[in-house]
Image (cartoon, rainbow, N blue to C red):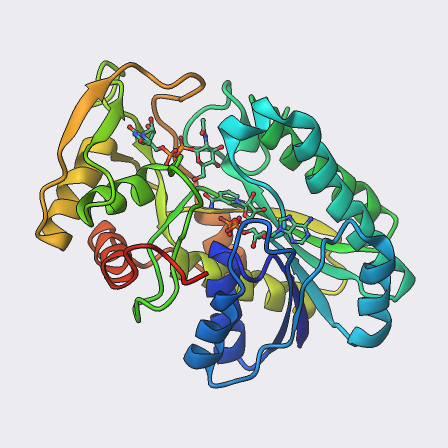
Length: 339
Ligand code: NAD
Ligand code: UD1
């Protein structure tokens, strides 16, 4: 399949591009580079041995998006493009709604005009909100999210589902848990701009000496060691989940819309992650206990059985591999990608 990968220069998109090529597909990247570096593309070409057709513009530009589809000959779209920082989304909510919804409107309109039906969408476990029982199951309703970022995901799920109900789209809603890790080559990985918001990149930057110590946001949660439990998933497993979902949609043309959790199905605490990273890197991770972060939940993980039953996919890689691969990337690229 010739697959348009929106946000293909980003963290998860870049890993998925490599696996699409390995699976015999032809990815085409469109990215505004608002949160990624153009130098990613050269790394992708090095890893795949292929030239990666890349278009640099903002998907909200409806004319450029439509023109890309007019020429593109795409069989399907994987839609990663979006802004994703939970805290920032409360500071600049309008930018989040405008970017995330605007990009999706423009994309879906172009798909409709040019007869492309199939879309795999990056959703998040955040759509389960604060009241869903753990483990999270895909049929849970009502979806709710506690940040503007999360609400853009709920809204995009609704919009895509409503269009799918008309028969014009075929949609996979992939709800990611906590993506971490990097390609085993260490050539591509997560490269957050500024101070990392998420646990794993913060730990990795402490290990490599870019930051002095980690703050552990609360150790008085009702969990075994008092720190929150999350369902960490290796980005390589996540990328494989996209290829599986894409191929499932292609094999089931009558399927209109379906949600799948992409998680490992178990929880790991913050302190367990620190210990695992120390072992993988051979470096100490100094930390201090800090107050809880607003909005954090004590514990959640996926019920991942639907993806295994229907897509034949499951998360294979261990916490040790997640830490070892993150460390290979971080230690080989202490400052992230070159400009
Ligand atoms: P990322 O920021 O690394 O990648 C997103 C890419 O989209 C970036 O390269 C950015 O430049 C591009 N982009 C943003 N807005 C655009 C626009 N309007 N037009 C064109 N390109 C645009 O993020 P990621 O971690 O790779 O996440 C990919 C997707 O998965 C996002 O939609 C994110 O919300 C979702 N997601 C991520 C996580 C996570 O923890 N990383 C968890 C759940 C869901
Ligand atoms: C966050 C987002 C979630 C998003 C997910 C993607 C919030 C409230 N939620 O989830 O919407 O889908 O990222 O990966 O931001 N921690 C520390 N110190 C740090 C950073 C994190 O102790 O410097 C702790 C957090 O309190 C949490 C755990 O590490 O208990 C994981 O945090 P993080 O990586 O930010 O992921 P989530 O909070 O699960």
